[in-house]
Length: 153
Image (cartoon, rainbow, N blue to C red; front, side, top):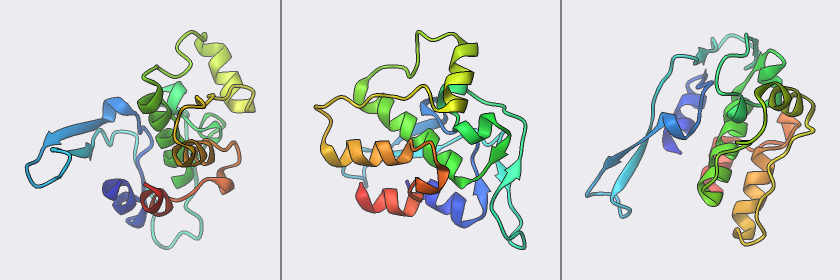
């Protein structure tokens, strides 16, 4: 979480956040015994501080199941990383791959239009479910920042 907070504070959008790009390193100093490290910055975008808006137009490149609707429509911002985090969180709590049985073409259209949504199991802790649903909001302005996500977790 600290890594994503730092990226966004540095005006960088990762652009391809997903489980395969989160590496675990063993750590004796961490109570969990590991530290998560964000990797693969090949699709990252740096936004100059002088730009008024942290948003740019982009070609949709990445893993569709983890991509925010606006990215599939050609717009990238920090909120896109939050959406990808929400999908990753969903996969973490369910143990399932998102949209695994859906054809890529249907997936693309469904995510772009908001017709496809990930359902959160009722047994997931209410705080985690509420956070995940907020991260996966179709409206990017309704998604929390990584700073807020870190406070909740």
